[in-house]
Image (tube, rainbow, N blue to C red; front, top):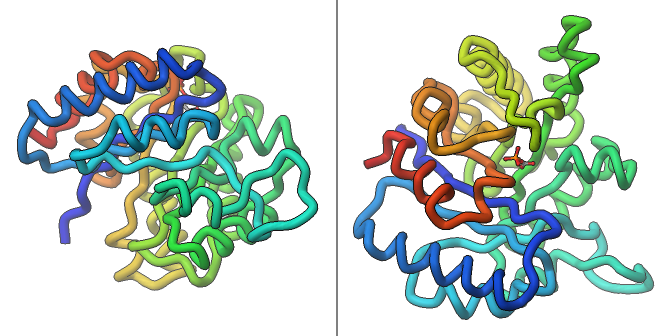
Length: 254
Ligand code: PGA
């Protein structure tokens, strides 16, 4: 069964109210112009913008996600946000285990795993991120590192319906550097094989594996046309309507 491409924007910590709403409206207008499309769109704004972005996306099929969540539903967790809160505000997705969370907030595979389970319990789909550092890539450990991240971060209860994997080499994020297509193809195939071992072949064959790290309109075609690449998780280029849409248009889904 063909996997529907997912074009996902990770806005990170960018956007005050006026620019965030303008960006969401701009994306909504352009997506409407595309008519019936063969891909799915997702935007993941900062928490402060979720409510307004939801309104701006009204009348479209563009999905919205959070960029992180706690594993608890509520309680004494100052500064955190629960999956129930994300669901309540209109999110369908949550990004988990992004390398910036793993590095800056010391999130381990085990933490990502319990967060993903909490997301499922609240009817949210998890976008679980994995990726090697430059040192690991240069030491020839990239495949092993990512396989372990997949095995340990992805819950046993993950299915192709509730989970998307994003392969994001840490050294490619925000740097303009992109792995060779051969390296991306090799990694995505290895991730799918690992998923098959863990979740069974039919889940693995239908689960989407996105590529992320310096995706832009000019490299979207070669990356997104690879066999096991089922979309993109886009940081910098998701902050401009024309770049975000440009990536979708060059994805091969049209
Ligand atoms: P980038 O970020 O597209 O700016 O490299 C990707 C990401 O961190 O998800």
